View 1 (cartoon, rainbow, N blue to C red):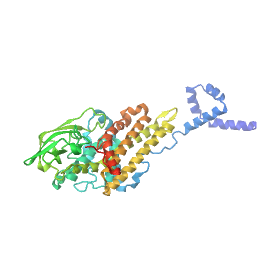
View 2 (tube, rainbow, N blue to C red; view 1 turned 30 degrees about the vertical axis):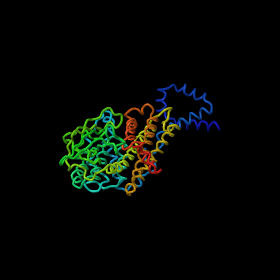
View 3 (tube, rainbow, N blue to C red; view 1 turned 135 degrees about the horizontal axis):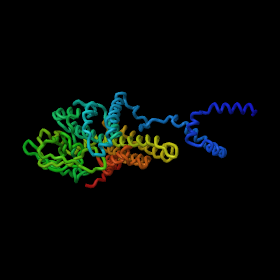
View 4 (spheres, one colour; view 1 turned 90 degrees about the vertical axis):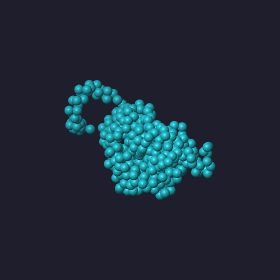
Length: 454
């Protein structure tokens, strides 16, 4: 190159220099030392330096995909109306619940101020026909359970107990008069419900070993016994109590009002999961319930099982929500958290965890979607619901564990949300039928042999 050409290139180079930026840099470092150090680099080192500088310059310009746990885009299968309902619940949970979720969970208290706001959504009893209920599909009920748990599994449990187990017991087993009396009020959250089946010594064996007794005396029933782990029961207006008739040996259901003589609910403390849920130990001491408050169409445990089958699908969806919330929180974290000069989302080992998480989550979502389609089509059986509960509760455990792992030490702090999901996943794993009991239900269906031991 001629001398003129070299001078021209040098002038062009000087024009491209940002003198203001160069002045700022000179205040931080000795430019002569920087130039000397760069001059001593070999070709390989210079290429590496330029690659790093170009990478840093492009950072912030790289468009990242959105944080979305619906990898197979199942939302596309919803109707516009269903999608609108889904987003209404999501916006409510993001705006009203997420900002307060950790503080209430940490204090083991319930945010009663959100109940009137829940009423405004008009979504309780979502799948029931009539009585002021929306009359939507069971698929929509599952989607809502997921959206609730995606932000807070405790609030999802509150909603599921009230809208599913309590309202569902009256909807399936109540007389027309009982439905007319209670369901419209419960749909508007004017009356809050709880569901009392589990006992201190009877969980999985409730079908044959229920200890709470009931006996008819005149126009009243006398109930005696204890119930444990009863969500909402410290403040509910009514609790559905299941008891065994001492005369017939059959299981019956009762609408027990909080003011009934002999009814006492005591808050359970020191839980490691679902801390916002107000679980109670209920003591029934000669609790008097009028015949008019006996569920008129609940005459055996088979009727109780109908309620559990209907709601078990929602619990599987709840597991999906818990996993989705943890995955999305972890994915967001890995895109922002930097180590060694770049986001940890770019690391191979982190990506492996994220792919395992989204694989499990996608399998859970598609399974539950089909499960709800079967429920809407009248094809749902106990084994279908049990398989979903088994698989989803197990896979959720894996997802939340990986979510905590990619966050490192921050994963155990409430402020990053995942720690709450990790703890709450343990409750999902156990309630609405343990993994073992649900496995035996599925095992019986696929082999033709019952492995239950009486």
